[in-house]
Length: 292
Image (cartoon, rainbow, N blue to C red):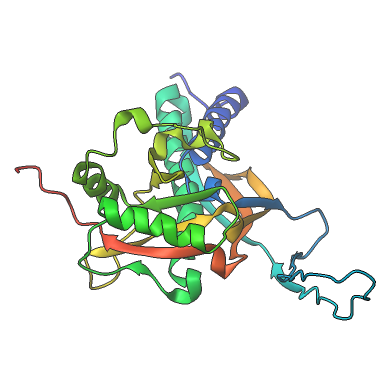
């Protein structure tokens, strides 16, 4: 009777496929993370402190007269820390014996999607608190072309530093794209994605209004009890993703289970850096009618 065993080669090949696919999937499926500042927490550091200076005023001078008044730096700081996020996948000996690259790629996609969704949802959770919690739009309101343009004007008037972007659910942007002929396919990538990664974000890009790129994100959920959800319009400097440990993995043998446990962990944190550099956008995200 022939005996089949899971060899080290099987394990290494399977593990490499799973982790490589997970990393690739994670990198390309968290648009909100790629739209904000990305910072690194150095080895041995507990936190990262971000300073912010206040606004100063200049005044006219008179020749021969000393400058009497001085300006305050108005320095404030925000402390950023990181925490661990992860999941475990079990690769049984039987699965390894029946090694199939597509199966392990599928597992990698599932792991990558889980990690990306967690990071993306962590950023989305910050949206409702931007602009001191005062949302643009309202429940039962659609993201019309006029509303979208006014949101752009509002954020520009706040003197938020570029690049400024808007993110909302595909259904909200779907209504917008069909609500006015001013948005056309020729507007895609108009002017390029300044200071943004086109390679990572092009699959989420929709159109450009008043110089501001609009992106869709299906992870935006309905507000409890409503048919609307919070997207946001914000400067890249409004929020930050602090990374202490990039996506990594470890494996451990579980003999009684006849399997290997693959554990993936990332260590990060997401934070609001400047409340005035962004605002939540509350608009309807219900399913669009397809029988008009």
